[in-house]
Image (cartoon, rainbow, N blue to C red; front, side):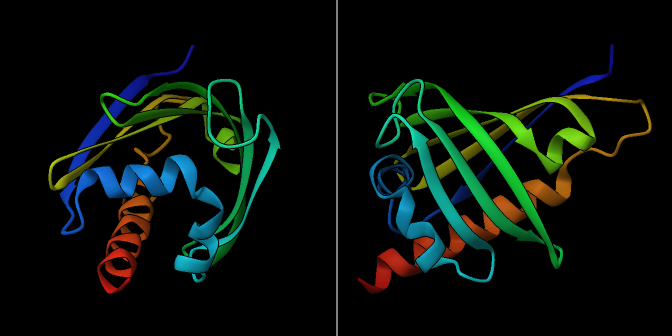
Length: 147
């Protein structure tokens, strides 16, 4: 069994946390257009728009490398503006036995929680991935402020 970890960080968003949540929940397919240097493709395999049980995949660029992640939506809380995305396939599972991303938004904040289990004690904390997610969120914020 690997070492379990959890990173939680928030960033201020000018458009409001609810607006970021709305993009993740109902307009996820637009993120590749909003952040084309980071997100190459988003696809829904099962379940339609983001809802519990939906299976989605992303092709993305992290530090100049093309990556892939397939996720199942484990929870959606419309009151808390929260979505729980569990990785079931992809590059991140090369380093981690399990990896879950929880997005949530309130007022002028968006919060990310990364919950993971490292394969070994030497596996690095996923700070690069956390930074990647916040870069995408900032691009979404900028896009929403312009439109």
